[in-house]
Image (cartoon, rainbow, N blue to C red; front, side):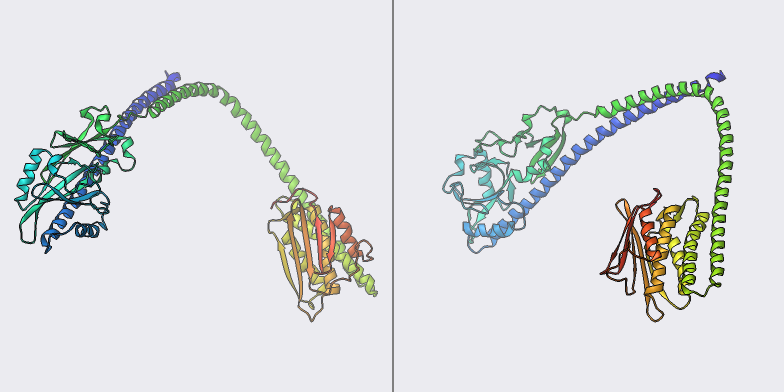
Length: 531
């Protein structure tokens, strides 16, 4: 039983995982369906809210027009009504969605005004009895005797669109009834809110007046003549959708009942990809778990052998580390002894200087001592470096110049130093030794021939990389060398040494007479650059 312990645990874990996965998929399905329902509700109720707001704006506008007519000393002419409309609509979005009819007691149209035109469809002089039902004419006859505003059912206008007509009695300045005023709002102004943001591609809406008459943005299907040749492509009868999938709202518009229902054109389906991927993922997890269990059993047999092998490797690594540590200690000791030997030679040369009176001999010994010291400094840096093979260039140059300044210049000559070298620039020992001897000769030469005690002396050294080569620029503020100076023909041992060392670095040297600058191009003798 103990041998199959992990197998039993795996079976239990996979069973629990299957239950959890099914619960998550059911939860996902419920959430997605709820999202679909929420989106339908949002679109529907936003449209209903916008329609209510629109009809409210329309009612306020009609009330304003009625007040204007009622308070005018003379019954307004069509141009006056149009100017008043223009003032009212300036900050509203009715645009061409509104017209105002003035009809006399005999239902003869006296004028038709839109915000931009007067009587655009030539209806003036026509009787409304010709195109409005008899029962509606009777309602208008009653309305002329009342002092109220009434919203009639939508009508198909001869202008070619469907509108919501508010009607109220018209009286002249002597308070005599002269007919009625009928401001009419385009149905699109109210119904377009349901189709904003490209929602017509996803939803269908049904509009019904008084629970019996269908309405669209282009026509009202009440049995009267439809003058509009256009038809609304989003009319609900164009889509096959059952009533149970609709949600419904009723709007009471000043006694007119507008029933609005909304539904998806095509009921959304759940994204099966997520569910299928979930089942596939779990199947792969089961397969992986079985393979893993098999592999663990196999690995268990190998672990004991690997443990013995690791112990043996650790012993060998320890022996190698001990050996490496001894070698590093030996290399450090070698660098230390080489440095000490060079310093001893430098000391002997310094003692030998006291035995001669000839200034040339003394200078030669001094220059030799400086060269030995520059190489000794390399070994001192190698002794202190972590790799025992690379030297930080800037740190080495700073100490080298300080030594030359102390031995050649003494305390009599002050020199300002500007060293433009990357702190992370590192060269191998051979490259550093050659570079150190070159800089030693250039700095020594500056102290001997360019600097004096009275002037403000300055040395500028920069090293940077250009492509796969390095560039050393050396500059002092002395008088410079003569114009016909040539390294190859120079009798100066120092300049010959600079030329030879540059060749060893596979480089070339040139002197810029205009800027009194030494420019040396060279390559590292080993690929030790770590910039």
